[in-house]
Length: 207
Image (cartoon, rainbow, N blue to C red):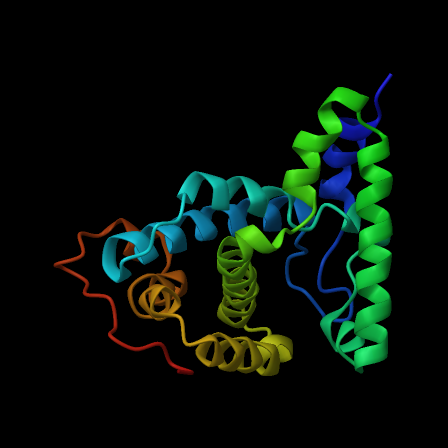
């Protein structure tokens, strides 16, 4: 008997943004899906517009598993995780232990294959950089959605995510911010309108 997938499917019970007042809670399962979708797009943008040679499908699959360790550790709030280098290093070690624990739940003949999904490797550093950017974009979208609901709790987090994304100096990320992010402010009725009738703003309010 293997417990691996039963554990993996508990991602939907892990709540994010625990220190914040949320108008709508976000769980780890939906976050992972969003990061996967964004990572796939970023890899495509990198290839099509900036001469990259990434495999978008690989980026998407890695992103689906990027926070799997949080099934065991829970979601560590960012202000705590990055409070100082010592805490950050200790949390990395906890993440490593959690990943290894998950791997032990698999049949032996599958562990190496899933290790390649759960444990970042230097040879795929560029893909993991894409996933890190996608993770921050997903967090930014959450902040935008909360602001759209009138929740000012996320304003500072929104600005912090934007600044972090700008510091990455990744052209594919800039493309997302300019071309895709503004529409997250739209209502469903506006989203359904043809683009030529309702042009997307060229800049996002907080950029």
